[in-house]
Length: 155
Ligand code: 4NP
Image (cartoon, rainbow, N blue to C red; front, side, top):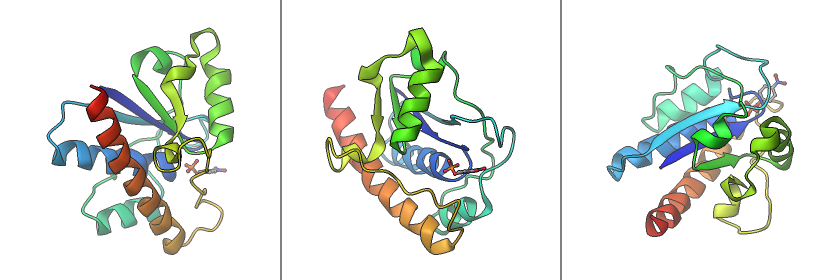
């Protein structure tokens, strides 16, 4: 199973999602690949936001080796599931994927917790507080736990 986490900058939310999912994949000893990408190239090559790194580290997860990269149309074929953080990410992934768009592979990550509600993971970039990043971490932990259970029973 190959899973891709996507947000706008690939420095705040999706790196946390990747780190949380990778830690659960390790915990449950699953042979899954986890990666993340951004719908923009604004931060390409940069490590995650210092607060994402800090909050993850508080929970025993190391994000410091991650580097931001833009989402590409080829990711649509490479990955089995693509989880986006908000509806704008969803529209952008659809636009970038072009002819390779596959609706069955893409969903908002919080739909794992509240199916069909299309709730957004709030972007902590603008608030820029530890509290905002911790809130994102908790939302993503809950969603990733659900996803592991759901995807594991499908496999
Ligand atoms: P992310 O947050 O999409 O969760 O990585 C953002 C990072 C950077 C910007 C916006 C959101 N920015 O405007 O540069």
